[in-house]
Length: 96
Image: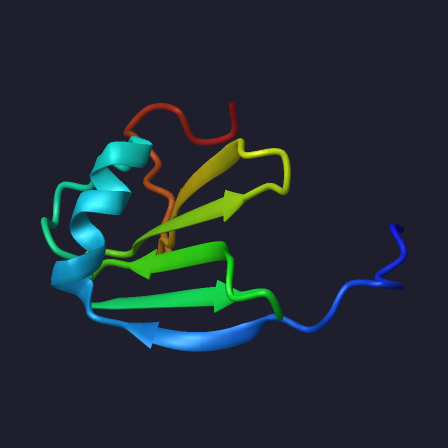
């Protein structure tokens, strides 16, 4: 695990979703739900953005991380609900 020595804590800020849309689309976020319902930004002690997390109503989440060298990484994930499935046995296949 990397040491956090010398790095300050990140400051969490609630962002306005409509204002974050340009940044998210420029970074490559492709969400079918349109505008996210919540966007949170994280800033380092110098005031530089380090992370933006956008959550969408349909379960998608985009996590955009800004690195010190000027690059960024984007991760998108979908939250899914598990559904109980009852197995169906077709006629004539019992005991196979």
